Length: 250
Image 1 (tube, rainbow, N blue to C red):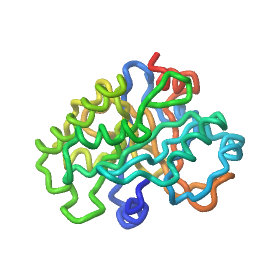
Image 2: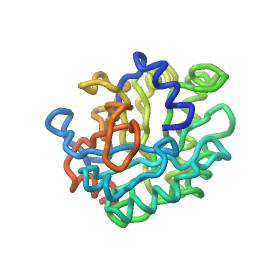
Image 3: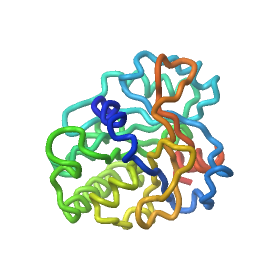
């Protein structure tokens, strides 16, 4: 997803685990094979110029698109990708790569909301995602934060994003990172959809307390017409009507 993340992923693929979540009654099943019916992708500037019409014609129905990182970085391809995905009929959402050791959660949530992460009920805009994963920079795996400090940072981000947009943000994470860095915190899963990252044929164990997953990133080396090179592939845990319901908050 982020620039350094692509490199980090390939160095830590064995450590990455799961992606799953809950969104106020939108998904009622935990059976991946039966429920993972809607294909999607996530992209950033590293995918280069994307032909979104070809992507949609290939059956891709949703995309998370990198918008921001930290407090000052905005993906240079975000505006083009976000508009062109929408125009091609792809249900899209923004995502923010978290840097919990450089500012408060509130500051980063406001930065996301002001730079592409806002929301509108148009059947094609998902609530934005908080991308929370192993630190690819200096400062330690958990960004130098204690489990209590990490929980507080995440809650600050989630509360601020909801205040700005009226929506519960999606949370992207791995089971290993979440359980280690938040101390197996289960607090967000009552409302916040889980987007689990595990590059495998099965979702595996979910983060502590998560009853099911909403999105699953199952590979970082997929291919899709309209995109040159590798791209992350995902599933939505439900049918298209439930994905649109999530987009519209209905």
